[in-house]
Image (cartoon, rainbow, N blue to C red):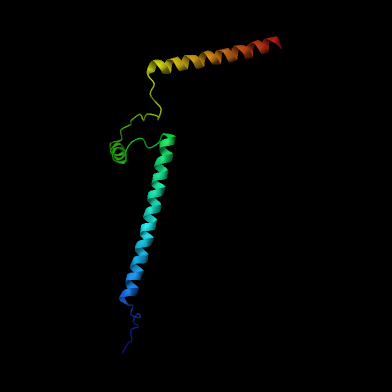
Length: 106
């Protein structure tokens, strides 16, 4: 006859203790994941990422639609944007004009 080695019997108290330890580990991992998720959301909002909720994002991904995401401080109209571009072009021309004068005088 073949003898089968049995595991030593554990008490019910020991089983409860193991179960509680496993639950604590799971809860600790969930708390860490929640903290990391909150930090990720915070950092992504600073960078202007993740502006769309998870459900809406998944809908966009499934339908392959492209949506222009607004930047965090984007409250400008087209006229203001054109004005900023014109100012930058004028500043660039002024810098280049100064460079040309320096080059001609040398």
